[in-house]
Image (cartoon, rainbow, N blue to C red):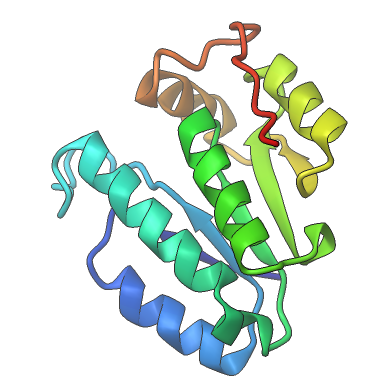
Length: 157
């Protein structure tokens, strides 16, 4: 079981540091505050920058010295490239981290990741009383991520 971290919160950096020191499994998400919750990072670009920075901390050489799987939940191709580049830069084996995505959103991106063997891929299915609301909020979070949208190549030499 992993500790789930929200990149849209300022406190997450301290949480990442503590989890890395403790060697815990960590799952990083961009995070989506409910409509009534103000986001400490009001612009999506700010959340994405923080996500990339936190992912780098989770994949760092310091983090590799500890046990723990790094789970990175995103459908954003740019963030996926950043994460894969950082993992390569740190010499992180593909079995030490995984991407997580919602089943049914960006299936062509799922295939591309698997074909390139960048990391493990876990497809998630919403569950619980508000599964439909959660799924719809995730779709609305990034309209560019509809089911079946086209994928740009993720391959890097």
